[in-house]
Image 1 (cartoon, rainbow, N blue to C red):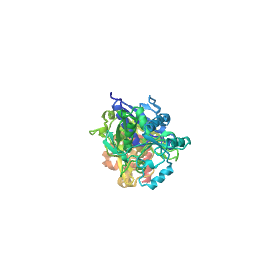
Image 2 (cartoon, helix red, strand yellow):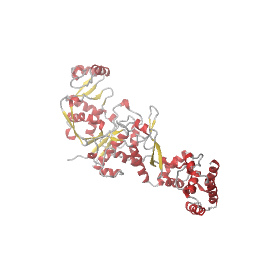
Image 3 (spheres, rainbow, N blue to C red):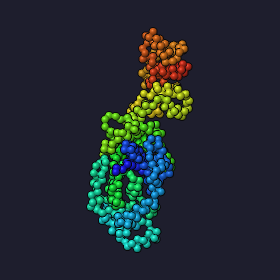
Image 4 (cartoon, rainbow, N blue to C red):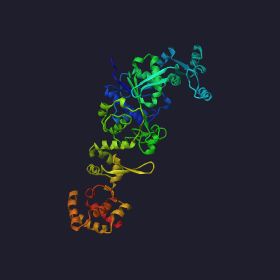
Length: 518
């Protein structure tokens, strides 16, 4: 009988969730939902020295924001708990004892200082079949001596006993048959008496088995551990329930070689964490996708296509659409460069799917931070006029590039003139737009505007266009100089949109100020 698909995402609460971890969780989610399976949320906190307060809550909040829902686990409940590894100590001890009893593991008393001395003495030292009999462990001691040391409170670890010369096959759904000879593996530590907790290797195998995990989908960095995990499954006699593995490609730096890091984000100006992170130790604050104005559906769509190709040209997909199309066989074996600029595009596309009314709350917060209070209706008007504009953004090398508005926050630098009169006038625009007859034209235009009762876009356009035509003026000469007066530079939507928004009184006031300054 075929087992129900069950996958897990098991982060460690050692800090903020990296965007690579988000992608791993997303792929697990897509795979589980496509097969009608379950997604388990497990916390790996066996390394008590690396625990960071608030990290677990941060991870859970991140997935809530992203819309990636778990079926069971920490804070979600379920029938296979507890789901926090620190609460499963007694369970692990049972399986440590089982390995010791059947000769697949042994107790080692070597101190950190002794191990360091051995590494200094022997180049590329590895605790394995060739060196274990030179060390202080239960293979070189009598049972009585071992018991006496433990009774005396001497700290120890339990190591997995790996026999050399065996080709270990890892059946990987992305990479195919991966073969690693056991001779290159060391006798990994599975348990530490100091905190009575297992290491990652034992805890994951036991938890995956007891939680009936059918597929382990994780990052490429865990591939070297896979042969050890296969051997552990065999040591327990769990071959029939061994999960299928899938090791995802790494997320690579946008520029250069190597794995994506926080430093890359800091250097190039993009987040690598889903939410803003406040480091409790240093007090440093790291940017988050949420606080940077990204929409969760855009982040998920962007990440999904970093390492997976659904086929065809379609790029914009909802979570439900991704569930239907997802296939691990279409995941790349090679790392995916983190094209953060493409992330801008995704966010813009999803932002445009929302009516401008949905943009208003965030835009209102921005205005209030600038000391400006405005009605939602007027804010929506500005958004509608400016949402298709282009902004400039700086590159690390000092160069400037252009892109369409991708975030609500992009609007403010472009639309400040709607709410604040210019206090200076751009020199380049002055040279281009302010001609010998500009003062005469603007003075005459002010008289025309004073006589307009209907100061709407349509009302102004009808009167001003007729005036320009009747006097034989060039449209560009009038409009370019007028824009300079109201905006201070050569940007913005149609002039009638600007003047109608700020109103007749403010329009005339700005023109008077410009005539004095120019």
